[in-house]
Image (cartoon, rainbow, N blue to C red):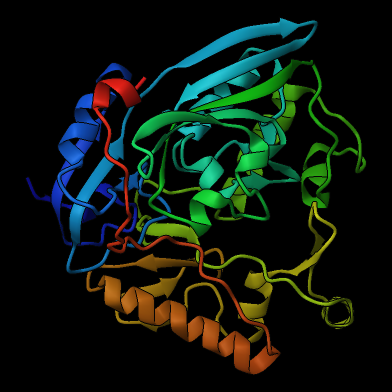
Length: 356
C-alpha cells in the first residue's frame, strides 16, 4: 500500500512509495522479507528519515521503515561490555543509555538524529569519535544471498563518513548493532577545542562522562546541529556536504585565510565545507532556491519551507557545490541519501533456511 514519504522524512519532502512496510518486531523479520521479495529490486530502508531526500515522484518499489527498539548488555570480562541495539533504536537514545550506565565509547555521538542502524552506513562520527571505533559486529540481512549474516568491522569498508553499505547500497539491511564499551567514569580525551573551552579544560583531558555528554548536547544545540521541533529550520537533513579532502598546500592556504582544517583519523586533511560555503557568499539565512534556505545558524544546513520541493532542494545543493568548485576548485560530496530504484541479482532460497 502506498505511503507518502514526506510523512517519514525530516525534510518533509517526497511522493508515494509503491509499498511501505514497517519493521517493529525483530521476530517477524522473515515475514517482512517474504512481503518485500516479490520483485528483484531490493527495498529502500528508512530509519528516522533525517538524512534522506525522497523524490517528488516517490519511490517505485518497497520502502521498509526500521522501527525495532531494544538494548541489551553482555559482560565481556573486566570493565568491558558488549552493548547490542536493535536497528530502529534512536542513536541519541542509545548514547543516553550508555552514559547513564557509565559506559564510555560513544559519549560524543549524542544529539545526532537518526537510528542506530543508520549509523554504520555513514560511519557516523563527531568530536573525534565514530561508530566504527567500538563496533564489534553487525547483524544484517543479505538480499543477494537471501539470508541473515553477521559482519565484522573489517568486512564493512569503513572510512570517513562512508562504508560498504553506503558505496554498495541495496545489498544489506542492518538489523542489529553491537559495540564494545568500557565501564569508565571519565570520557575519552577531548580532541576539539570548542568542546574543551565549553568544559574549561585543556585538549586531551578526560572530563567526567556525564559532563562530557552534556557539553556535546549544548555545543550541538548552540551551533545549530540539532533538529529543532519548529521554526524556519525544522525541515532539514543536517549537513548537506561532507568536509572535503584537501592537499597539504591547499590546507595551508585555507588556514592562512582563517579557515579550519581538520585532521581525519586516517591522517588526511579536510577543509570545513561550511566555511567554504560562507566564503562564496552563502551566509546563514540565505535563500538558495525556491523554498530552500541556508539555516539560521549555518550555511552547511539547508532547510525547506512551504514552497520547497525535492527538485528545488536538489537544485540548491547543486548551486552550493558549483559555487565552491568555481571559487575554491574544491569538489563537495553531497551527504543526504536519495532513494533510487536498483536491480540486484539474488539467489532465492527457502526463507526457513535463510532467516535465522
